[in-house]
Amino acid sequence: MVTIKKLVAPLPALLLTVFGLLLFNGCGQPGPRALLQGERLVREGNFAQAVQRLELATHLMPKEARAWNHLGLAYHGAGRFGDAMKAYQQSLALDRNLAAGHFNLGSLYLDQSNLPMAVLEFTVFGKSAQTQRTATVK
Image (cartoon, rainbow, N blue to C red; front, top):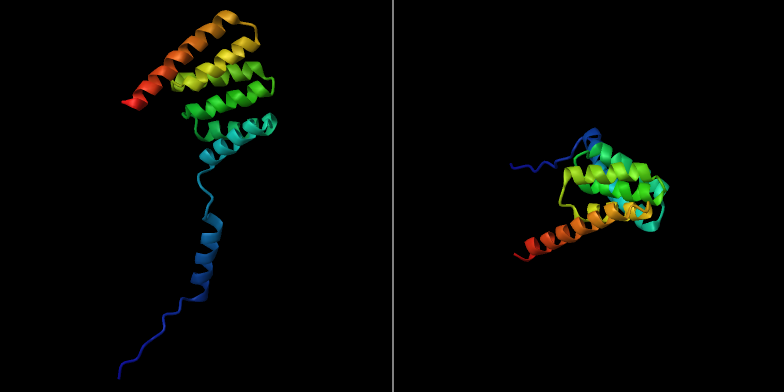
């Protein structure tokens, strides 16, 4: 006679599986999540909170030029010009062709009334942006 056995998972295994899915589902990586949250906070003008999120992002992803550039934006918006300068320079040290980094650094120089350096950075920005556009078209 053939019998059919129902497969029933032991209760502890089932609970562990459900708990694991609830705990880890949708969490994502903390570095990219902090970067995205920081970007949003900068757009909203909430620079103090953006600084906290983006400092975390740069700590978790120290070689990510965009994170440093956004940290520079947050510092810049918070009036921390020295910190903004360092963050922008770090972003450009990681990616010399980051057009947004050159633009933001130029804006910082302009805010500090350093016109020659602002013109230099805006010029590099224009060349970087043109290079990126050309590379995209090819």
